[in-house]
Image (tube, rainbow, N blue to C red; front, side):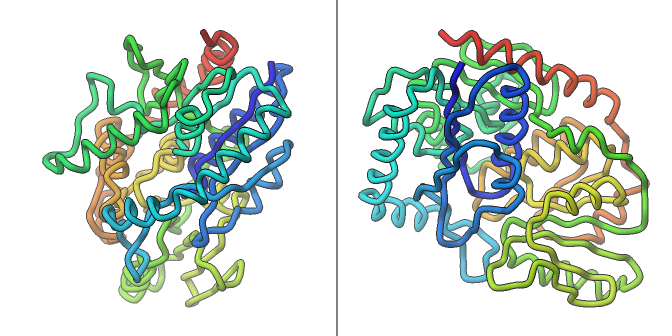
Length: 358
């Protein structure tokens, strides 16, 4: 079969999922004719993605969140307003996707939660089947616990799911735990890459930090000032900063580098991250206690934090406070064994679902 990918470029998780699924499909004899990645002025396409995706890549302007000046919180209403102003630009992106689809004639378009995918099906109505993959869709499962309150945010997420999944023939909801399917949802394991599964896991003294928004760096620096003896390795995508920026003796910031990130993950004593899905799964697979900090205003991440905490990944916080992670380490209960068994079913379930789309 022939597939075309549309990948959200906001953060790292959707891209690593695409890399993993790309590898699985090619291993089983299928073709990925093109990979479309949503872009914004704030972010650059990480080298690890372009290095590992062995298919033509097309970056196109796509809806993105607007953050505050410090790069810490998401501004929901400004995000909606700015994206509406860019509608003409997004239509150009949709037209380019349409050109690719007409030229390549894929059997299935796999959308890793980019709104361009839903808008494309809304405006162009292609013949190719639409399959959507994301943890965000898991909120429709009856076992999911929403964060308390925030009715507007909850409604916005549900609306966003409807847009991203518009005309989807199949909805694959990534899950931290093995749970039964529903009428609309097919529950699937995380798409961990083979590099994660092949790592030798150890426990050294350092902490690993991943921040989607660079404004959290000041909180990490504050912890370092109180614990200068604990090495901290931080990953971000702040523009204009060297690939490796050594702020202090035991405090180093890195541009997104997957090889280094995985190595530090395998050997860290704990992991601090904004509450994305993919890297929390990687920490669970390696048995690493995790402190999750949902980006302020980013309701999806608040949902992730609740779900991951229920699954035993770690704890959540409103601040990038490594003191809380340090205190949590003795209380952590490792769920690595159960989680690994769930992840062993990844290839079988994805091939089964993607080669049988009605």
